[in-house]
Amino acid sequence: MPGSGSERRVLVVDDEPKVADTTAAVFASAGFSSRAVYTAEDALELIPRWTPHVAVIDVHLPGISGIDLAIHLKSEYPACKSSLFSGFVDSGELLESARKEGHTFELLAKPIPPKELLQLASDSPS
Image: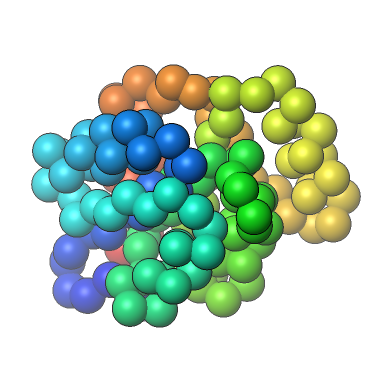
């Protein structure tokens, strides 16, 4: 089970530090416990110690892609809701490839309005 007690944890993964940090700050300002990391590898290192309820993941990351990270989370941490976001138009094609392998994810276009971000975390199960 993600998190502990009633603490709501949100992980933001984006290779642009300003985007990751700002997005995490939006969640923190609304009372969520949030962390920002800049690579999927950093996320994989953090998650066993600090398992999020929600992961907001950029599709295009160096090394392990955001889609591969989301697939891993879905497999290893099924209670964690993963939402993908991207500023690139070709992300739809990548998601379609994942969908053909049985993995369906929500894709949000950057920039994501703060109200939509907070809705992602509010809608996820505790």
